[in-house]
Amino acid sequence: NAGVTQTPKFQVLKTGQSMTLQCAQDMNHNSMYWYRQDPGMGLRLIYYSASEGTTDKGEVPNGYNVSRLNKREFSLRLESAAPSQTSVYFCASSERGNPWSGSPLHFGNGTRLTVT
Amino acid sequence: GQQLNQSPQSMFIQEGEDVSMNCTSSSIFNTWLWYKQDPGEGPVLLIALYKAGELTSNGRLTAQFGITRKDSFLNISASIPSDVGIYFCAGQGETSGSRLTFGEGTQLTVNP
Image (cartoon, rainbow over all chains, first blue to last red; front, side, top):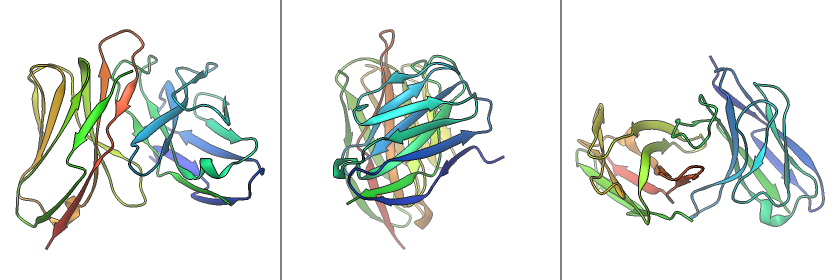
């Protein structure tokens, strides 16, 4: 039982390049999330998907797009990477449909992205 | 929006010592979650609290949901080297649609 799997683990991009971060969960969870983690700033929500077929913006959505491909998979796309997007990106999932119900999040191991 | 203050930012302790950290919010929360993040990995849930005054243990870890519903505490007893990592609190407010907000983390270092 892998839980939440993210790929790739590391990535270096040049400014302006695009890429997609992949995330898959095998816990049959309804909700999925993308967070970024920066030093001294905790975890900030980029986008979330309360259930299959829906996506919504979080705190810091600018420069990102997401796709909830099916119940298992939720991808994050950077169309034109900028140095300010250098960060560690975490995908998470939770059981309940309402992401604000206090249902605990289960995190992947992160993607470390550097934009030069 | 909701704000969470987590303290201390970092702690350096000797193996065997007890540790205490806390989070306070600017508004009332319905849920408090405590996570631990090991280097190079994602946060892992330690304890979830859903009622004011609730005290829950997980091995050597004990967390409490404050009576005022604006704070939470995490205690680690008899620390060991593998307790090293970053501890995060997260809370969710009582109003409909309020976000799960994360604290900035407490970096714990345990010297053997």
